[in-house]
Amino acid sequence: MVDSTVLVESLPTPAREKEREKGSDFSELSRRIADAGLLRRRPLYYTVRFGAVALALAGGVAAFVALGDSWGQLLVAVALAVVFGQLGLAAHDLAHRQVFSRRRPSEAGGLLTANLLLGMSYGWWMNKHTRHHANPNHEEKDPDVSPDILVWSRGQASRATGLPRFVGRHQAALFFPLLTLEGLNLSFNSFKALGGRAVKRPVLEGTLLVAHFALYFGGLFTVLSPGKALAFLAVHQGLFGIYLGSVFAPNHKGMPMIEEGTRLDFLRRQVLTSRNVRGGVLVDVFMGGLNYQIEHHLFPSMPTPALGRAQLLTEAYCAELGVPYHQTGLLASHREALRHMRSVGEPLRAAR
Image (cartoon, rainbow, N blue to C red; front, top):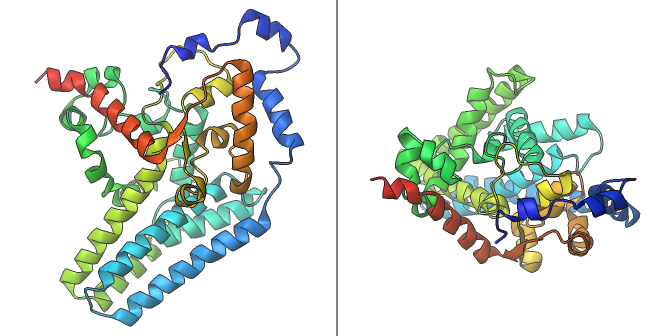
């Protein structure tokens, strides 16, 4: 794991600054990436990928209707949890304009996928995610490390009160159980955000959210008895939340946190706070390309199939600069994240 001291040690030296007076370190990497053609759109890839997810969703719905009031529906719930996770990854790529270069088709696809199919506000999530990309792991500016329930630094732990203080004591052990609520949490915050400034089209987004839940709960309680419907809901939403958390948590949790006043250029801010996850094709599919988190943060609009080659160029370039570049396996990434969560919760346990 990258130590926080690299945030200072990896800053450009005066000699390197003079050497690159005509451009930043990132601009040179950007030139190499562009010369390799890695920012070109990949319409065939996204047609096949999104088509496969659409067929999986249609197959899951068809199986749900065909099985009727049966406990076998819990297997359908498991399958649809995976499909919903893939829909979330599709919405992510649409929001970053990896699929379409223009705003309108990206937004239309995002609203359809996020609001109608997932029950999550596209506008709210995009606002939140954009702020995360601008300042990853920044204690004051990254909403993904705000101490809402969990704490992500010892400073946050020392200031925690109420629920974060209570949960933070054992947050490493509670992390995956809490993830079972993440899908419902996203939906709750989506409805809550309709009255705020983050959602620019609250009527449209609200209508799509209501339509989603009318179809979702209407289908559950029409086809299934109340007990089976609640069991389906628990399995589906619980596994969906765990899937999302398993995709997003390895990317930054346990990497250096940035405090107010720390000065980093764009390349170092993105590389030092991100972690790549190795694992081949299966991990690529499971994480939707977000296992190449460093490259994704450097080039958010880069299509998913280009990230693998970009990783080789970026790692080699970071080696030239002496910038630490961290990647590990999927299980190891979770161990690092959980170890960090346990460590930052230590002051809360000691204070009991």
